[in-house]
Structure formats: C-alpha cells, structure tokens
Length: 133
Image (tube, rainbow, N blue to C red; front, side, top):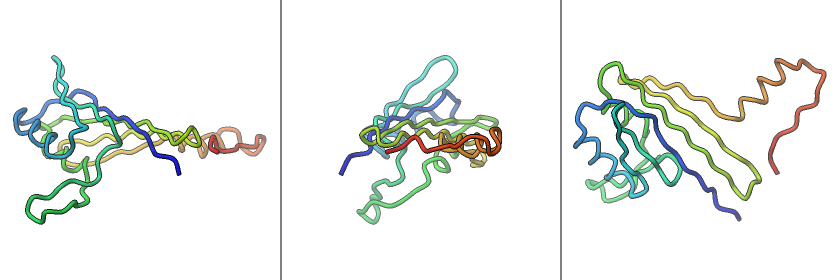
C-alpha cells in the first residue's frame, strides 16, 4: 500500500485578529506554518488540508470543516484560497483548490474536472482515458 503525499498552501488574506489566527493554526496541526506579507496572512501545510483536529474537551480527534472554520477568521470581504497537490506513487495525482469567503461560502474545483470538460469540448471524436494507474 502506498502513502498519499500532499502539500498545501493558501493565498494571502486579512484576518480579524492575527494572534487568534496563529493560535488557531497551531491548535490544528504542527504541519501548519503561518506566513505573512504586505497583502495579509496565510499558511503552508506540509500535508493534506486537515479534516480532523484534537478536541481538548472530549480528549479525542473530531472531524471538522477546515474551510468553514477558516472563514470565521476572515475580515469582511476577504476570500481565502487553499490549493492542495498530492500523489500516491504517481498512480494518481490530485489537485484541489477551494475558495471560502468571510461568510463561509465555499467554491471548489479539482483536476479531475478536466475529463468532463474535455468530453464537452471534444464531443465524441476522441477517446479520453484517466491519467491514473
């Protein structure tokens, strides 16, 4: 069995409270690295976008929606974008981009969407196989 290897990052955006945002990142994973520049703050992740976190109250891991939680930190009018790229022994490649606004509305795209797009554009005249295995 092969391991899924991924790395992720965000764009730069403005948050309500930088200290609170940093503490939130630290509470989720040691793989998260805070970044900042003149455009705002963001993060790098040396793993996939987290979908579980440690809950101090219950003393167990719980599932959570990273992007909905991220939205709570954004200033009004801000949009955070995350991108994740990954692979498993080059059997398949993953590419996912997610945008979330300060209200928690999410837009999602992935590399696999190319298959449907190609079928629409090249209507029936070409055989399209998956770039996997």
